[in-house]
Image (cartoon, rainbow, N blue to C red; front, top):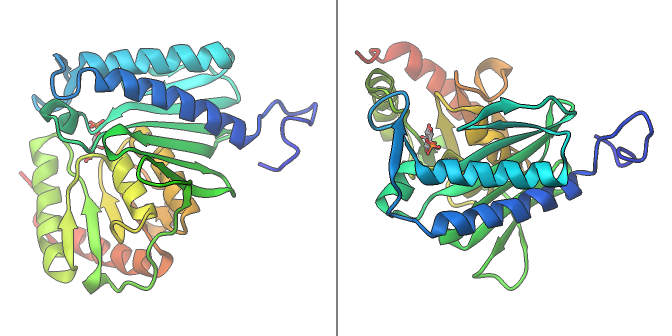
Length: 283
Ligand code: IPD
């Protein structure tokens, strides 16, 4: 998207900074709502397995986000984890109202509100708000990735770690909710473990990508993620210098999402491809 978008009569696409600003204020409001029931939400549904829960607060946060986005931009489309796809505007918002639902349920701190704006099929703005980290991560396409934090006097530009060889890399990953998927993912993680510094499983894919952007881990990979888990965090990681993609040049998606600085990305990509083809599949 170029700088003249929004002024060209042929295009009604707004500036990424304006979309990021809207995402930031809506995410902060949703985070405030979520804070009122942190550790004490009511489970109202299960999805792919009995441990894949939806709480009343996932729903309430998504309703708030949808209401506020559409109040500001009535024609836009929204893809949300709980409500699916609605609308068909040129701007599509990709929303995980509560990424890290299990952490939230147990009162653990690493959960976030993740909101991305996609224009003409490209994510151009992304915000991940993690109130218990006192952190809001923001990126716009070409505008860098930034951390605003209650611990910092001013916003800090994020740069992912570079020059880390695979055997010294701290690698974040995640696991799906279905037993067979977890068995396969665990086998790959077990085979990777002796080949890297260590593995972290923090429970929010969006925050894993932000941690990568800020140098808190060196790499992230996961199979089975959804667009709402990685849309905002993926842009934040890219704008911090990471490569974010799937296997063999495919886009980051459920088949595989890998994120790391380019050289480490290549090493991890090849290692994961080899491990996935060699470890026994889960039952
Ligand atoms: C989950 C988290 C988790 C990841 C799972 C996601 P949810 O999202 O991001 O870290 O490993 O793949 O489904 O269910 O908390 O919104």
